[in-house]
Length: 117
Image (tube, rainbow, N blue to C red):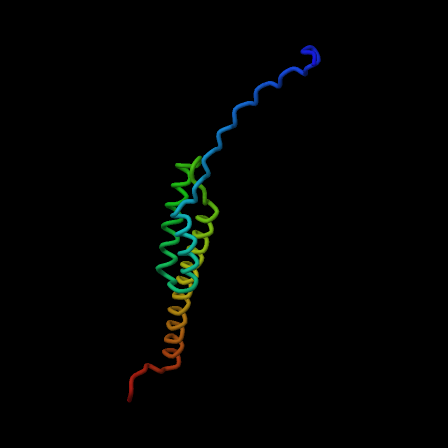
């Protein structure tokens, strides 16, 4: 075969692009989400407080290391679950206190002091 009829050599392939390291999910964000769920189910007050604290810690960690850490949605969900459970618990306590106080005022208005004659 004649060398003049050969196709030109193919250009060299470009070097492969380096793959970016995958982002890691923040452990604090996962703890916040799990604690928020526990705050609604098994351990209401403790779970809610842990969800709130770790949720704020996770969000600040994610903001500091945005290129290597993810999980902001998990942290926000944990915060929402924690705060709503905590606030609903406070409102329930307040409702009980107001109810008992209202009953005491009603009984006092009716002349019932609770003392035996």
